[in-house]
Image (cartoon, rainbow, N blue to C red):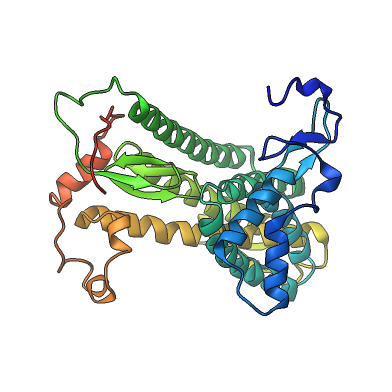
Length: 362
């Protein structure tokens, strides 16, 4: 217990980063980083990264809600997606111009906020919460807005649920393997792996650990991607793309006039009256959002398949000069390359390994 029994705290009190008793009504007081940041802005000076980090940490510590036994901390960066995404969907359903404006604005916002969070809060949950919020929001709109139009067959709804369940299971197992690996690396009793020393450990500042055979850290899934879960990462992308495209097709063909394509596939025909009714506009926005996310995930999946085939980890690919990227990295030394078939076998046939923590300069 900090500074005694927390039962002595009122519902609006808490212990701050300095282990001192504080009150949520004083959240804007006594913040040196805020004072310095405002002073620099007034003087026309640049706010230092140290001030940004300090101010961000202070905001994260002081954003709390009253609760019995003491105020509960609420991370503002994790709270943003829960507020922003539903608001964007509601505004976008008003008209075509609002849809274009909202999606363009949210794209620029993601680029700016990602750069800020990566520099100031490397361990932020903003991106993962955005992923979870998107899943919940899209599924909620489909089940409670699209389904009542009575155009979705039971088997179609079951098929979509299976795809979503496949994505969630792959995501869960992927994060589970990542957590198990980090726990194993922290266990000093792990001295070997199949009797052999393991090399190729790479530092991850987000996981605060050296990850063996690391490919990259996925902020949207909030875990490191390496040999231990790379196959699950690819499967999660596949299930996500399939679920997003299938749900968008069901939505568009249910609330708008469909036509038959090759006598088996239904495609939307007339979407001119999408904004005349709120439910139609909201369904249209969810379908467009699903298609855009599916396109981005498809590009990521294609990139991953290419890099695996040529034997280049993503962390090495981003460091290549433009000339090497134009040559598809084939003009560079590829120490991880073992040939097309063996490269894929390392990913597909990999079971959960127990690596050894070793001292290795990265």
